[in-house]
Image (cartoon, rainbow, N blue to C red; front, top):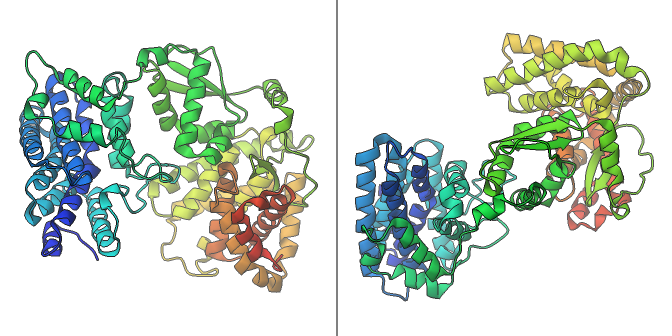
Length: 612
């Protein structure tokens, strides 16, 4: 069943339980509540601080009281919810009168909260439908669609389940914009909450209670159920406070009201200045704990396990060192904003993060400092192709460096190829059309950003081979299947140029020549390729997507090969051999290092049996 408008919802609610309508209204308002918090960022010169804080207070009150009325349905909260609705309405009207367009999103979200609170007080289908519509209409496009999909999910849940919907996560479908986020809510709702949580108001005053409460009912991790943060007694006491308690007067400020709410809840704001005063190393330890909480152990260890804190940066700059330029580029491109946000939570003076590449000697010292118990046992030769070790029980590709004087001979070609690959990656990203090809080009450009002597030859061969396979297929337009969206001429020319240069570059390495020759021989056996392709695709998918088995850096290297093999087929080019070696060597390494104790590996090995 699909609900996509106020009329749809009103028709569906006809004849349904009043409790159903009430919980749908409240949850719709809660999903957009975080937009109210964005009003704190409007400069005080255009929107008085006291008025901003008053709107946040009254919108929180309306949202909290209406949530409590549904959560604790045995309590009579009609008077409290009606008063909260009226106060929030007045605050929202004042916001739009004073701040105009800047306050629209926050005031509109507040209006949705008001509608939900009004429905919790009076209970009719029209109020419930209006609440959902007000929540959905706060924005257009994807945000509006997601809001209505969430309402549809709630309706379907009520049709199919016997539990208590208000105790379920606010978003029943996965709406994360990035898979590494642990909390399930969309980016347009996440951003204002994160910014408010990192602000002075959110970190050093009792307004931080709002963030803590919201994250608890969201919840803040897909692995955890929503929870009642302060306990039933405190929730009911706060919700039933009379209008006078929430009214700002000359003798009683917004901040004092929030302090009293915090006292009832037993919640205390963290001492922000004490945190900022910690030694920088202690702050880094706290940031790393937050990274593990946000990203999970696998992703955090893959990308930040070899990141060190340096001590010679200015107060407002965090200086972090990494072993390779590839890691530096990746962290800057994918994790800079998250890292800066977490540092600001520890020290609001920080306004930038700078990555530097450690000198080789320092990296060797870094490795010597690893406790012997944590060292990975030596791995036997796996044959040609990617070589794998295991870090923290997960597969991790080992960099294959050039040999002898190969680096010096390749320097000129590397410089030209690096520039062209970067240009190709930028152009494909700007076109916003060729998703798999753009991802392969970006990964290839990142690999080339390393100096020649630090290059991962096997990684370049595998990812560059996937890129070349795409080039061949776009050129021929019908290898394995016909592309519905041909490349633009200038993009095709640049892609073919990069593909040709890649061939010359990879042949300049002894290991590269060996892999190319083996791939050519392998491609001459279509019968074997046909036997391997089906189970191989399943295993390659696991090695690209399964976070339990493979660290993120290695999955990023596998992804272009997986995409090319799936799109073009294993027998169309050398990409089939790349895929074969990843599958063969990856599974051998997992078995060797006993990752097979992970129950997910049983599925992989079951697919593999008899195929390779």
